[in-house]
Amino acid sequence: MPITTCIFDAYGTLFDVSAAARRAATEPDHACLAGLWTEFAVTWREKQLDYTWLRAITGAHADFRQVTGEALDWALEAHGLAGEAGLRARLMALYRDLDAYPEAPAMLGALRRAGKATAILSNGSPGMLADAVAAAGMDGLFDDLLSVETVGIYKPHPSVYDLVGRRFGCDRSEVLFVSSNGWDAAAAAGYGFVTAWVDRNRAPVERLPWRPAHVLHDLAEIPSLVEALS
Image (cartoon, rainbow, N blue to C red; front, side, top):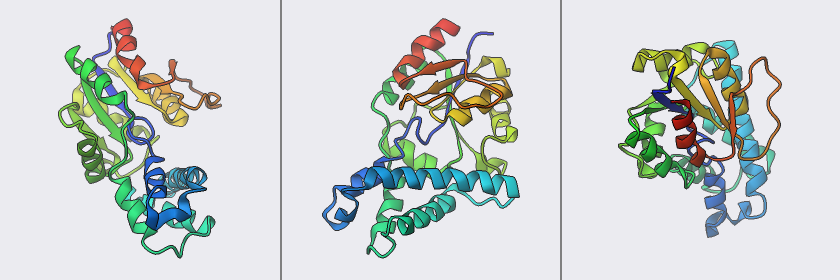
């Protein structure tokens, strides 16, 4: 079937999750991050994902804002920054205003002009997603912002991917699912979506039972891929 619906992961795919630490590191009040923000951002992100998976496995769901804050607390302590005045609050504020990858708005606009449905499917809470989209100036480029909060469990649980069919009434084979997270792209492929993994860092393919159908290196390639698949 041709692709009718393009679904995007948010964090790491449309929005740069390292942007909060990078921006804070340039501010005089948070110069403590200047020499280690890259490593710190990786720690924060890895712990954030760990906590989503652990909460999903144990049934101890909490929204993504809370999980992000708990991961941040761990990262701050791990890097010896827990006592830095105002740093936690500043990083949490910046996380609501992450930079979009520069090619994202034009890519989404091209899909809209081609008549494709577009949406986010994310671990993010509805408020976080709405703030991120607005801050990036991407209002009007999505038909919906789908959050795991609707089902109360994190990706890659199949009930999260079910949200797409419930919202758009499309067959799984009509969906192009785009994620920069290799595990997410793999799980979505196993679910039955056509998947594109945006491998920005030239990482190895995840050793899971499923593999993404397409491997790209940025979002700019998505419109031409959709055209080829349609």
